[in-house]
Length: 448
Image (cartoon, rainbow, N blue to C red; front, side):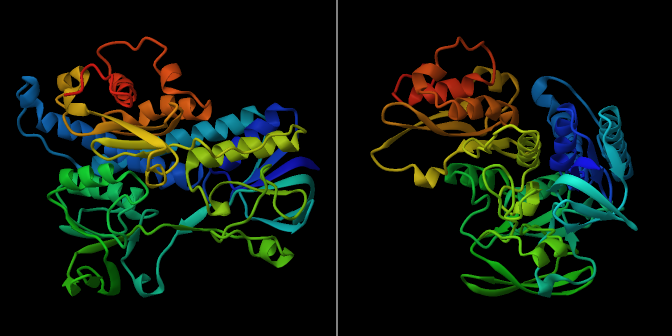
């Protein structure tokens, strides 16, 4: 008998397991694939491992600007893959160690929910108190694109050699990160995006600026892939505002989103679904079936590892007897392009008109950025007329680190005056956001 049984050991699942165990509950977790889930094994960590190597490569190639001469720089794809595998392996072992240290029983098997309070593992039926479902998601691939050789974000980093050309379907965060990686390795990239701009969930200024940075990438917006055939090279028909066009990339990568891995038995139980096609939950992360909770990508809404972890902790705390409501007001978005893009708060398109004021500050005017030879990007802040911060967008080196500070400000409902109350050290990248906040009321010292 377990107090909590968790199905799926991604960030949400193992986070929930460890938090529940730390409250004194008896916990078990089942994972039919690999501990750590998609994020650790195929998504976040492999992607960022490649990106860190590429960032170093870019810096070495521009070393003359720093007064350093370097010649004969190249990369080795096999070595990049080995580095990625080494980092992933260490992290998986670390998660396994944490589960063991917290006395979480791990079942390396598929778990099936028989009924509320009953789970089947192999041939055994186990009685449990509460169940947390964290089975994650899988890449969304249209039927007409489900042909041999098509890559998704789940398998792209198993490649043994680089293609000469790659067509990426989808210009959201994943597609743009992939474009950055492969373009940096010398692959000719084409992005096809259905909306009128890449990164449609970010500020228009960020979309416009990243398109300028990617001037060597072919970008088709307001366009859709209508047909795919072949198997490297492929024949791809895209429908644009100017009519159909045929492209012949060596490889195709589908990045149009992910779809929840819904356990059939839950559907058969009549669990309620939400508008996103995932499992509906209340503010305590409990489904319509009492005693069964759902967290992470399976809810179909915020498909982010940091959200899954937070939801897992919330579910574990509620099962332990606390009264914790999941709060989505200040969920940061982070995109590891070059430069990085990060944002938090209400969508900018919703914050327009006389009720809101905007402040901006360019990277090119910041002293610390100039020492880094960085001149692309900005910080943008939107606040109400009385100064309450509603959104922050950063496009700059280390934007993905700086955004946590902005997320705290929005979460705590800070005003511009409260945000500017501390003394910010100089010279730092943090001054970028300080100057943008000062600009809201026209008081930025260094804005040109």
